[in-house]
Amino acid sequence: MSGNQQTRSKQKAEDQPRSFLDEDWSWSDPSSWPLSIKFLPVAVAIIGIGITVYFPSISGQTPLSTLFAENSCRGTFNYTFQIARAKAHAEGLSTHDWEIGTAFEAILELISPEKSVFGSNPFPKGKIPIRYYKMDEALSYFYDTVPIGEGKTLAENGFSVSDPASLGVGSIMLGQTSPKRLSAIEKQKDYLLDEAPRYANGAISHRVEVAELWSDSVSMVPPFLAYYGVAKKNLTLIREAVRQCELYRDVLMIREGERKGLWKHIVGPSDVADEGAWSTGNGWAAYGMIRVRATIAAWSTSRDEMGKEIVALDSYILEIIEAAMRNDDDDSGLLRNYLGGSTWFGETSGTALLAAAAYRMGMTMDRSTAERDRILKWADSKRKAVARHVDADGVAKPAVNSPKHGQREPLNGINPEGESFLLMMGAAWRDCVCSGGCPPDP
Ligand SMILES: *[C@@H]1O[C@H](CO)[C@@H](O)[C@H](O)[C@H]1NC(C)=O
Ligand SMILES: *[C@@H]1O[C@H](CO)[C@@H](O)[C@H](O)[C@H]1NC(C)=O
Image (tube, rainbow, N blue to C red; front, side):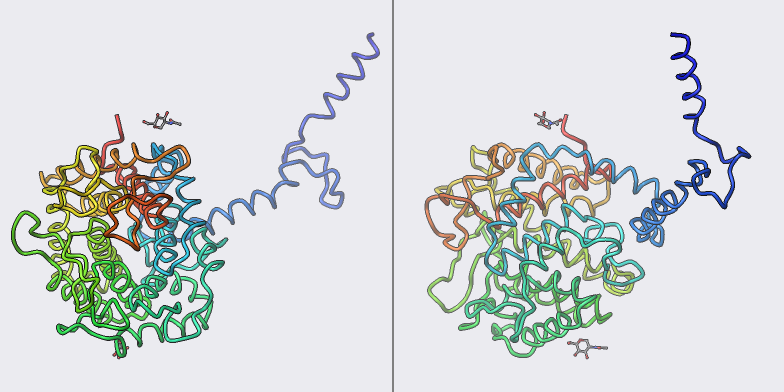
């Protein structure tokens, strides 16, 4: 018994980790090195990785302490609905070009918020962010899903001029390490500016066959032109992005009556023309403009040169949000598929996208204003209504059947763009809470 004890205490002495300061080790005999020396390369590697991952913030203007607090708030954030499953649907079910472009944007905002245009420093040193350590989830989704465009546009689309442009931002980000993608983007830009049909006032048509304006287009073309403008350091392109928003507004905005300030869905010569204020369409318009606004504000040159344009865009975005607030009258708490149409069902897709727009807009406004409070409270109430309509599998319903927007019954299934809008709404709310601009849910 005493012998056992002796053995144990001897072992204990040998197990004591050696210290750097102990003298009984030598450089020539690695087995004698104390742990602190053995693990030195590991420590150096960890610090190296830390610097690599946080390099963008170290070189930027965000204080690290703020960044860590925001990151930990984001990391533990409770979205109150099944956002991970919604993300899986957005990735798995998006097949059309605009759905994929929208899913990419939504995943970027959710998973890599610092690289989206709403981040604190989306253009480090005035440049498009590149990957530092590993490819972001949004970029690897895009890389796996979107082949390099071979033709004049980033995707083949015989119907829509605008929709392939929704692949623009992802292509520009990937293009930083792929010259082939860069030349496809240049062709896409040339097609939009030099070749695509134009409406009488100069607005780039949403359609290939006829010159027709759809509110959807505002989320596809202007955010791409603005982002490309930053990539090329070309203010003309950014100004064109703003001008296109204005030309669309001139034609689509409703000027009288209860729906004043909302946008019609489709104006043009074909039989799909639609005077209704489609909820999702108003979301496309407001969210597209706020992405352009954020892009301008995130690059110092455009921010300095385009103050007037930012003010103008803010007024157009607010005009839509305020009008949606006035036409918010369904008992479900959701916005109706057509705003101001009392026979239309309340619907999750447009509500989620307009709530996201309202959060993003509210975050740009002066914290002391009553209007900001009103907008953020409304965003909260729409978000909660949407969250109540997301099931345990992350499916939001009732949702519009988007390609058949005039269908009287909600979609029997999952709306891919609607799932992406859930991510945008969740990310916008989280960013507002984590930056101290919105109260967390009680
Ligand atoms: C997240 O929030 C929801 C709704 O407020 C609550 O029911 C749920 O328990 C919360 N989840 C966690 C993990 O805190
Ligand atoms: C900026 O872009 C426009 C439109 O593509 C082009 O005409 C112009 O030459 C560009 N300017 C510069 C300085 O590259």
